[in-house]
Length: 296
Image 1: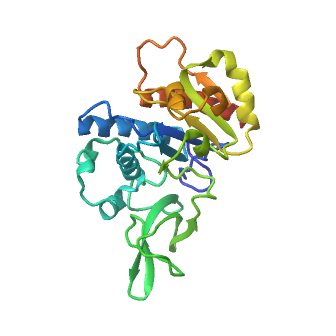
Image 2: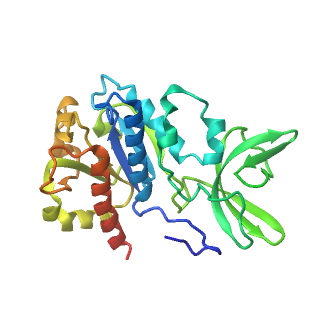
Image 3: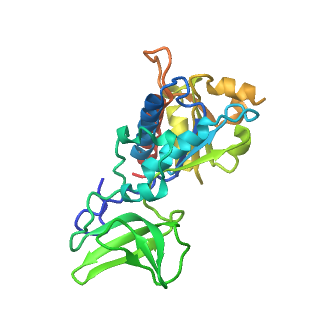
């Protein structure tokens, strides 16, 4: 999809309305001992989140009393993938868990430009890193030269910019990530605590589970709920080790009271176990379709 705010080809897909947040268990990928395979699977997950313009992924612990250190690995790789390629060396020093990031697929989100130059008349969304040089403050945004800021900002802070090239040169303005209508990539958070507390404040809470109502039976009601959602929506997934029903039991919660909808999005699945990253594609394709129908 290509936006129309500028020319040529201003690529700026909008965030869905309502905005979608995805909850992933911290045990994701730990069934394999291979760092290479774990890295590749996180890459597939991050691609799915980007394809469906997920604003935030929350990494939660299945058993809050036993936090899984794998959560930090997931956040690090997802953050790495969503960072503009020209900023990665500065922001991610060499570390063991990033050994295989070279196999990760590119996201090609709006803030990952294809060139260091912008054609005359063109406009791009870019991610930048604030630097101080002498008495001035600049932003490294992957262009021919850093862009000078009019007012001081904290060095090494990350910003987003809308950059335009006119015949007279480059102009830009800073873009607030929280207020921007555009998809700027997926932020990752590791959060502690039980699911009922983590999901407080969401307008609609959807659980993806094999033991849920078939999506074909609840299609109309789910669509109506999404159309009427006055706030963010969260979609929660289980792991290979525990489905949502088991996670709820571990946390002393009841599945039917935890979510507004518990849905089986893959009726008559052809495999014994659907991997989380596979479920994310299946579930978000349906949620995205229902949201798109709302906005037509």
